[in-house]
Length: 495
Image (cartoon, rainbow, N blue to C red; front, side, top):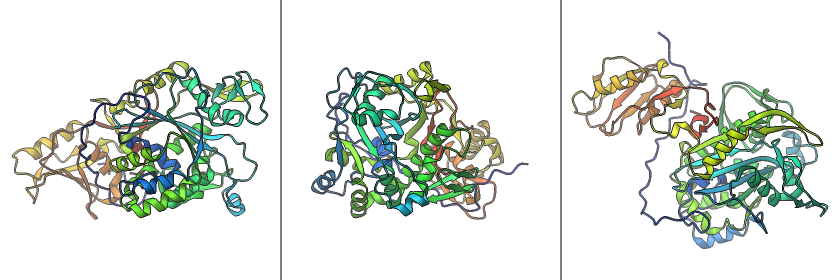
């Protein structure tokens, strides 16, 4: 009989109990477009990477106004005409540049940041926040994507250019944030509502001020270009090492596409770090962290104090499972363009369907659809389960055992009564060495609580509570399956 797979190391930190959603006073519907003042907790996915946190319910308006003044402002929407029609929800263009002027010589040497910056975008993502603020969809745009710029004035020479082919990241070098936004809108037909820009310095500072970010890797990662050298397992990365991780392009044959997947994993882990570290519950710490980061971030003028306050109040209820990540579908690799070089050409049909979903405010992942099986780290067939009835309801143990068995879990088929008969919330008890299996089992039991018990061994225990309603279908599959290759934040973060 096979033993359930263990996690990468012998011990693991206890899983954090998921917090129930807060009750909110119903608000009147707000039409799409400008002027929204609803809590924008989905925005947290964007600001986590660039400014960590921008607001807190415990910080007053006057304090936030002073922090607002620390943000460098840009106007990427100046004099823009013939823009796409606004859809439902909100779209933020998150841009990472290769700026390194404020990084010391020692750090440049240590983290392989030598050479002159190209003053172009190193990372570009569209972050869509659903109108109901229940979902954040992050779409990575490869920097080597084949693009055609609109007509524009070169920001360096002042010369007027007709539209011409470029790699997407070159739009920033030619026309700054404005040409970048115009090019993205032209390619996607998605209207951009806000613009946030972070460089190498602000990225490193963001990671350092939150105390580092934990990532997991099943395989060793080594890249001689960035100096990244991580053995398989779990690692807590500080700012410089985190920058190596998200910049590495030579650890496998996937180049920039593989790098974007690692960026998505890192962003999910950073989300988990910020929302679980206590920063949001400590106004003074929150203020200090925000002040340390805001000085190296650029944003559009519309992203101000009110948006920060709304964001901070809402972030407390966010979790990695509320976000989904994907990369725009590629139709042709190595598409050579004269004067430009080798580019990535988007799949016109799949890319249009993807951006159509953003415009329609629809989820990208099939895992959000009713009845679809949820992807988990370990297959149910590899997980052995003992069920206990933690209530006085006759037959509940047999019902839970049968439901788990029908979805593939290897139950003992001999449920027993628990020592406690007043369990309200279903518990998944597990040995910390089998935390990946426990996470997979808990995903099949919505609302269940993970409880590490050292020495329990490979058989996991389910103590059925009064809240039990159903077993959700789960399956093990490599992340990135489906038409758009979408994964949720909790699927790519450490288990």
